[in-house]
Figure 1 (cartoon, helix red, strand yellow):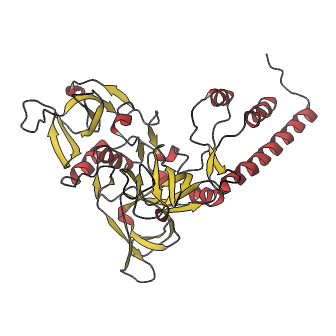
Figure 2 (tube, rainbow, N blue to C red):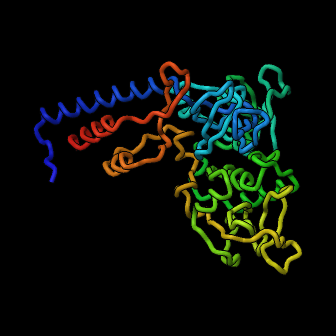
Figure 3 (cartoon, one colour):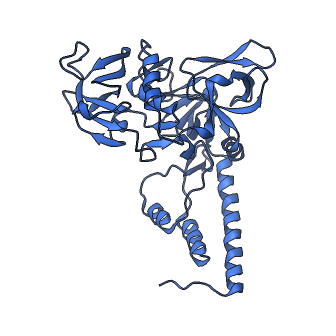
Length: 379
């Protein structure tokens, strides 16, 4: 049984030491982040590739204002990690690197998400009516003011100022704070009917199958995993009886040859689902329906609603990539941290001396344990 400290002088001493240690740790960790490796996508859609080359496979995209971890730089290409943990290479001209102070301020600033289904335009504040960028659903911009004509003045990641219609935006802090509206998810998916399929695409201009699911839920403030195979192991896992499915469930299809998950759609009703295959369209799980596709072999489904906050289904307001959220300092969390053998999403990166390259940095066991000891002593 642990002895509590009751002596006033001892308590004050340990409180002082804990505060001093916390201050030193904050300064130390902030210093490592200054070199570190965070930034924002500064164009409408940054392309993420498998290797640092324009000819490499497009594996994903990230829209304007998406926060990134910058893990390394290879000849003008950043190795980036998106908020859901997806990694790939993005050309440096698409990224606005920021130091830790700037990222902290960005995470605290009033921001909006562009939630219009269709591609919009950011207009110049200096030359009214002149577009300065296109913008896609899911993009995040800082708010700098409001205009009498029902528009919002915004600051882009590269510092440019522009203006958007307030009707096409939603305050970021209000998103993902309640269960997603599955009617709105399906409405958005159906509004994209006919949009071209693009391998690696994650914007309403063109997207792949998992990109469609990701877009529609991000517009509700929910961050899903990037690939269909990753999405298939999140939420409440369902079998192949589509009579049990609900609107907004994700339905997964497998390869006849390997059994691997290769495709995903969004369930609507009565066996119908919306998916991106060649183009965004509606098909059916009912073998008797003319909309049935025999080659789409149903493997499973998952339910997003009712499972917000579980692994792989993150409300944007609970994402440390978008908001300054202090990690827990409970003993249980520290023990789990010490036992962990996999990279943690809140690790830092810092320059490796003599190389100019950045590398993941994890606070030492001693730093973690000392903070734990001070926390326990002053309980």
